Image 1 (cartoon, protein in one colour):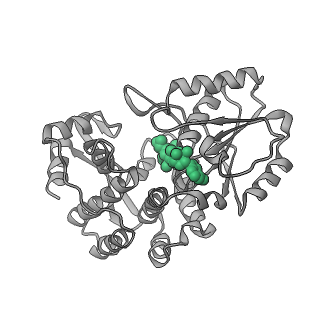
Image 2 (cartoon, rainbow, N blue to C red):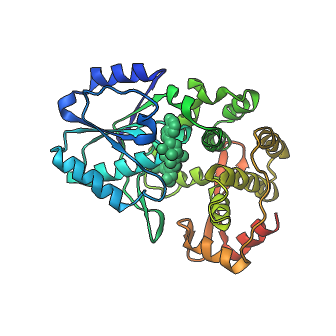
Length: 333
Ligand SMILES: NC(=O)c1ccc[n+]([C@@H]2O[C@H](COP(=O)([O-])OP(=O)(O)OC[C@H]3O[C@@H](n4cnc5c(N)ncnc54)[C@H](O)[C@@H]3O)[C@@H](O)[C@H]2O)c1
């Protein structure tokens, strides 16, 4: 299977030099998140377009705007489409690139911690619509992912925490060393070695199962309950906070189902408390409303829900539970 090359760069100056050296200006187009272009200086000789995106504008209208820019700039399949932005822009530009003339060369430059360790790897892209989040999309691997840690300097704590939760998730499902590093030092999130370990967990899984037929679902560890919390709170609880609590509940269920050592949950709880992240959530919706939300979730098939649990540290397992039984586990926490 094709793989994305991952390159680490310390500074935006270094990134600019890398782009000048490796991509011809005449055959490249850059889409940059406008919140990023207001913070950093990029080489103005590249054909660059600022895009203002957020979860509300992560939709087909924004994709059409990008297609329009591609058309008026004569993008072809041999153009390098370079995206500099968070997970939202990477998903939108990835989708627009994979579909415009059936695909140009995609280069992702993630600017949030979540995008660096998660969203820019593994080839998934997509947009939101009436059917739900990320319901329209393709699998389309970038040829390169350029990880530049200087971008982390302008992120707020909430964004760092959201990314850190995904780093921790990678630790639970794929490499315990990650947990030791994160628990040991609260500024370690910008450490290249840590990022690399987390990225390795994701790319190893997606290499084996690009189209999410089995192992890729492990990456949903903590997310089933996390999405339920986000939805129940009307998105007042952030994705990071919600998945953070989702992981805690998944660890508790893993203890019940597989006798997972309690120390993993206790250490994780200490981390959540020390980082000011929530460790509890009280659902507001009724049981049947929650079941409806779970039934609309992508992880549900024939009234069964695929839960990711841990048999052991680094040993995720998919457990198919019927929705009623899942509700018992979630509500009784
Ligand atoms: N494709 C995948 O495999 C995958 C995986 C996980 C998440 N996602 C998607 O990623 C999205 C979330 O991504 P996100 O958390 O990066 O959010 P985001 O892209 O919305 O970025 C968060 C905010 O930070 C701003 N920003 C980005 N980089 C910045 C920087 N360096 N300095 C200051 N501000 C900056 C953005 O403009 C935005 O306002 C979701 O839509 C989710 O569906 C995709």
